[in-house]
Image (cartoon, rainbow, N blue to C red):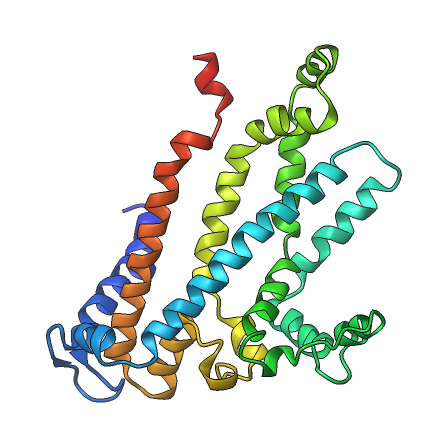
Length: 284
């Protein structure tokens, strides 16, 4: 057996199968698991008052943060891929937040978004705008977490810069000779040729958004925000597993989340046939 296969079996396959088995049991992590069939799944969908809000908040976060991250990363990449003084410095500045640990970034944002003393509300006050309470406001706590997710678009930006710089310059020159403007060259040449990278960023960003944990936990002190307004699925799994010791129920939640991610991933993969451009397919 190869080392990779051994590692996959020990650290991935066996824990997944164990989790699947535990999802059909009632287990408090200490006593012997008791088989309960589909009771955990039935409770999850029909009796749990927090599951649907947690799923709704997670979808809200994913739908808001992933497209915004892609658009901002594409705009920054388009700007920084051009020859300009200090380009390497600005690329480094854009990438640096991606190197900061999520917990540290979340603590910085707690200070930035403080209602009375935070710099964000202080900046808004210069324009006569009363900033919201952010993390203490049911309507603004998830937008605050989305802002934190946008802070770390540097990794996706660097990938897009590399993709944009690999576009053959003769394509731009030919388009320019045909009278195409800068906007047309961007949407008709640059964007189609970087769609494989956009596709990669979309898939990885969507999976990361559904698995958001550290940002929520640090920003809200593990309290799911005001009136559970920022409760999301992975923190809910953690609470059930390690705070309430409902390991069987937490396993059922984890498997439902896994299926949701698989459904979204399959949908994106299927849609990619219509909008992802691979240069090798044209050549063949």
